[in-house]
Length: 142
Image (cartoon, rainbow, N blue to C red):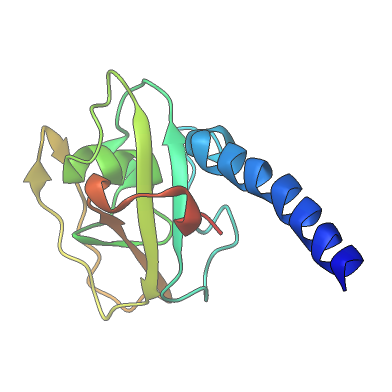
């Protein structure tokens, strides 16, 4: 009985530091994408309700690559959507969290944070939204 208890204590002592290391560097596992990457490029269509973290480099929004406002087609640039939503500063880049959503009947574009998004008045099969930066944590990246 003492042998089993001793082994359990040793295993727990080894696991605890490993878990602490994973939480100490949450951004180390966040994939770097470019300003053209969309959820469709990453094959995320159909992952409805799941959230993902990405790192956008410093750069420039691509207005022609953004369709919708608040909810975007899954062919839209993730980094451009993040700059449009105010989740990142394009000149600095940063971590962005998105959530995959079902397709919509249409998408309305507008101007926000010096970025123009386009309209699309037809159904589209996949969408995503940019979530507030305060909601991001390493466990959300899947």
